[in-house]
Length: 396
Image (cartoon, rainbow, N blue to C red; front, top):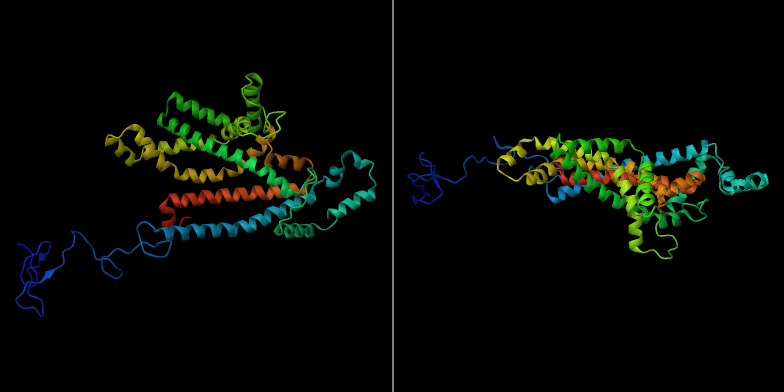
């Protein structure tokens, strides 16, 4: 029987109840609105209605969060990390001053060098007073923090330049080499790790896995010296170090790119072992999931199954692991820049430590701590943006 309106006219889509007439409309058939099969009235307080899931953004409920909710989650994550970063930076800088006070090395005698034995002790004490080394360590720390907020990091005692100028001249070269190494490390780790997982148990898998463990055990400076011996000394293909060729009076892009190949490759290879092994294990586990088995059962190509299904699902924890590798990346950059004489801030850290150049060492330590904090924060933000479960469940 076709559905009918209150006037008895049949309309498509309606339903006829077949029940007695409603009050106020005697003799007419009562009609109810058409609803899809299985639909449940929404709204709180309605029996049987599903309650909306709480949204991190506070508005709406359930389903995928809106862009405003995502922005609120990211802002809350950044605020929490900044709140924890302040006491961390205070602890690191205070510990740095305490270690400098307990150090047996005298920065004044290190500054004078061979002249320390013939210099008048009154002159030595006058230099120490000018540098503020005769004051209590808490007073030195308070003075350094106050100058830091005014943008005054002091003067480098080994390079005889303001610390801000040293950092401004060297930081771009460190960022250039480190950024190129990160891109190469990510691309290589994803490619090699996925290949090992795809060919699990084959000779290629065993070769990649064994090489990753051996690479992790090798010191960074040893890899750098080995690369110089092979590619510069034996074959003469690449320059052994420096920013430009000897005798060059200008900085040209092609010359810099040629000098970047060895340090960037060594830095990327030295930090990629755990990433390769992690990608391999993660992709192997994902290849055994039901949705991947179903994709293969539907007749999809093996390359599509591995790249679009298994690899994409295995990449989310990879972001967190990448953030955890930032401290080792900073440490590796120090050794690589020293081996290849790359004029970055990392190699300046070694020079400042050897010369007991405390103003430069303090600024570079603070810069390295900020790099680690920012690297972990960027990894967590990327994870929150990439995985809706993190912001829905409030994990981040």
